[in-house]
Length: 92
Ligand code: SF4
Ligand code: SF4
Image (cartoon, rainbow, N blue to C red; front, side, top):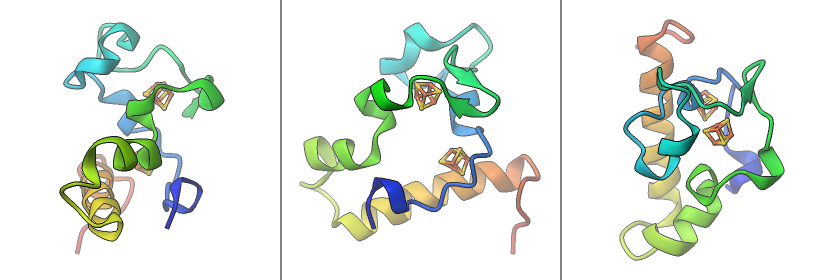
């Protein structure tokens, strides 16, 4: 699986909850929503920071701790928990 294959539903929730992500502090419009989120899409997608790129983050920091499958799986769990909490998808 690579960045383009990550099963993102474009719910926009990860970009609406960035207040705890230090590298994105300057993008927080004050309520946890990224200033670059437009119509639930990233308006700077091709220039988005590394923290928003799962492939880059894996290569630079997480490859030493996880297999790529594990890392994507962990990211997917966070992503799905967020969607369940906000009623975008149903939990089991
Ligand atoms: S929370 Fe997950 S599904 Fe929603 S936009 Fe972010 S990566 Fe995509
Ligand atoms: S820069 Fe783009 S991908 Fe990153 S949090 Fe903001 S809207 Fe989301």
